[in-house]
Length: 173
Image (cartoon, rainbow, N blue to C red; front, side, top):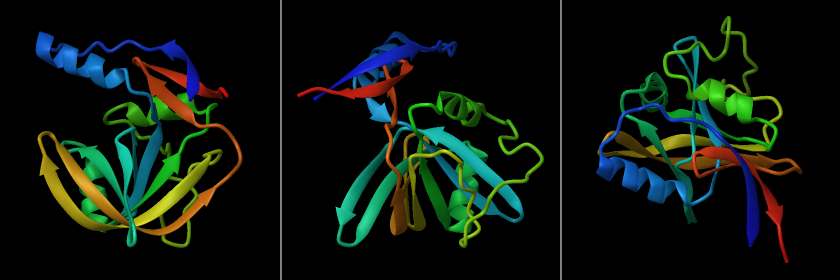
């Protein structure tokens, strides 16, 4: 069991009452925060997401949901490989940056690439490198199942998203 302390953020997108109700229901479930990155045709891409879950241990598969209209989704699918950066509790600003649509998140394009030529975010709690296994359309998102190639995790606490804001995890008995 964990308790969550949080800071709030505003969502200025106009929604129907049904959409608001669904968003409110989903926001009552705390999740970790990640940034999915890839590098395609000489350009780094990245986006914040919290729609991540394990699918299978054998073979090792995970699932991420990427907005169908995002450039990152197209780059992940076209490249066929991506990295899930697991954000640490002090990386809310990183999450906000990569959540901005259309922004050049990597500045001048200079970023640290790993042996797979995938962008690594400094300070992340860990990362999971995947190759795209399958892609399914789900409403306004691409459901990407990735075959896990490697994982690394460092000690620390994760950044959480709950109730429309960021928080940190406090473990209780």
